[in-house]
Structure formats: C-alpha cells, structure tokens
Amino acid sequence: MSENIESVPQASDVTADAAHAEYFKNVHKIGRIFCTLLIFANALPVFLVWAFYGIFPPLNQVLPALFVMWGILLPFFLTEGWMYYGVLGVAGNYMQWAGNSSNFRVPVVAVAQEVVGTKTGSMKYEIVGNIAASTSIFFSVAFILAGALLGNLLIANLPPWVLKAFAYAIPCVFGALVAQFSMRGPKYAIPIILIMYLLVSFTGLVSWQRIVLMIIVILPLMWFAYKKKGIYWVTKEGGGED
Image (cartoon, rainbow, N blue to C red; front, side, top):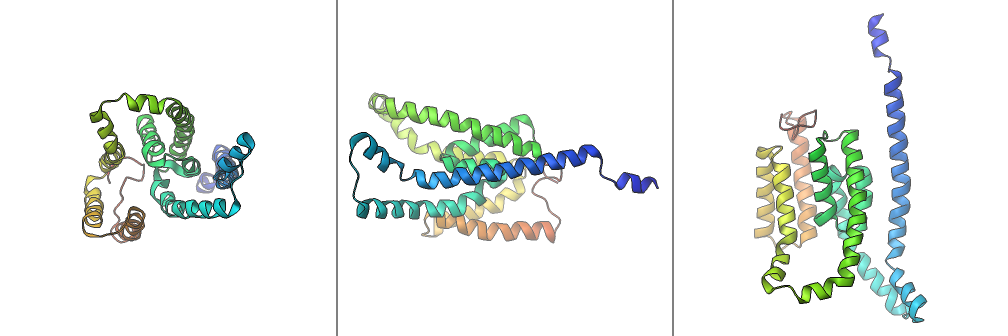
C-alpha cells in the first residue's frame, strides 16, 4: 500500500511540471514571433531610407541583395542552433538570432550558469540562461549604439597595437569557452580538439562546413560513448565527470 502511495505524483511535482510546460509553451510562442519578425527586419533599412529620405531602391536591386544575405545567413541558421543549444537552452537559442552569439551571448550565459552553480540541463540552468541572454541583448544594443555614434572617433585615436589586438578578440573568446567546458571533462575534450585541429589544418573547408562536419562526427561518438560504454560527459547531477 505504501509503495502505491509513494508512486503517486505529489501536488508540488504536478504544479512544477505544469509551470514548466507553460513556460516552454510561451517561450516557443514568443520565440517564433521574434524570429519571424527578424526575417522581415532584414529589409527594414530599405523602408527607413524610404521613410526618412524619400528614396526607394529598385526592387531588381533590393531583392537579389536580400536573397544573397539570406544565403549567407543560412549556414549559421543550420549550425548555430546545434552548437549553442547546450549552453543557451530553449529561450536563449531563440534570442541568439539577435546577433553576437559567439562573442557575447554564449560567453555571458556560460559564465552566469557557472557563477550561479546551476546543474547542466536543469530548469534552473534554463532560467539562468534565459535571464543572462536577455540581459546581454540590452547591453549589446547599448554598446552597438555607442559604437555607431562614437566608434569612428574612438578608433581614429587608438594606437595601432590596440587595433591589431582586435583581430584576436573572437579567437580568445572561443578559446576561453573551450577551456571552461573542457574543465568539466578534460579527457573528453582531447578527441574533440584533435578533430578540430585536423579539420582546420588539413582540409580546405570553410568555417560553416567544418562546423557541420564536427557535428556529424561528434554526435555519433557521444551517442556511442553513452549507450555502449556508459560514459557521461558530465554526471547525472550536472556536475563534473562521472
């Protein structure tokens, strides 16, 4: 009798599950609207020029330019969702399409989750990522606006050695992220880094092609390690190695 009673879900568990379901339902609803509006926002500069200056470029120039831009963004659409979902979560994955994913959104979310001490894959992990990603958007917009207004003035007065350092900004960000996540399971990072090195050094593939190939190679390896060998990259509780 006691076993049957224990197997019945408690009211708090049911309420929590219902709250989580409602949360994700709203996230998907708002996220889909947001991402759909972003597609049309690509054409917004054309209409702003028309509204403020009375000039509307010919459609035979605007439409090909838009299709070229969408074609450039398509590889990122196909790869970045896979790449960053484990860090950004559901809500953050929608918000990453606001831009600056690799050099701002992902580092901010990863550091916030690390500082708060969230468990990988938990609801707290998702919520902290949501808050961090949304906050980073406000800061990035503010800095981009300041850069647009003051950037030329600042850059013109920076010494050459500072300007050269900008070229290392994104590689340093990615290196820091690789180091941060490798610390959770160093022995699992070794084959991933080795594959990355081989793809960069011995293939003529462009960046997005290497990313797709990394996904194709690594996901089956992770599945094999988990299913056949019982190896976890992190513990069931979301801590370090098993």
